Length: 105
Image 1 (cartoon, rainbow, N blue to C red):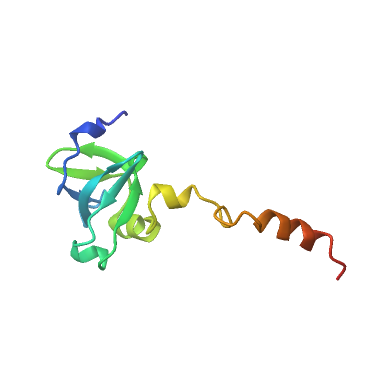
Image 2: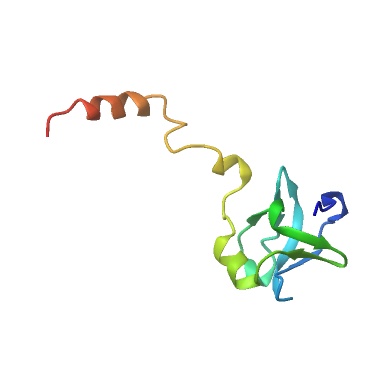
């Protein structure tokens, strides 16, 4: 079932398939929903959840899993950070890794 993600608005509540509160929509970033950090559930941090988890949108955004599972799996880093591999900002990381591979232990 395709969900019309354009129906999601700022400050909509996000709930699990058990009806329990997960968070509040801040905005959509790419294929992710960014949740507000001011929501009591957020602990003062933004969290991101994949749009693929969304199964329905009415007065709230409904997900395909219970709230506790979504909270356990949400990301504390945004889409830009997740796609960046460790060492990407270090131009010498690959050289160090190659030199380690050649070391005798």
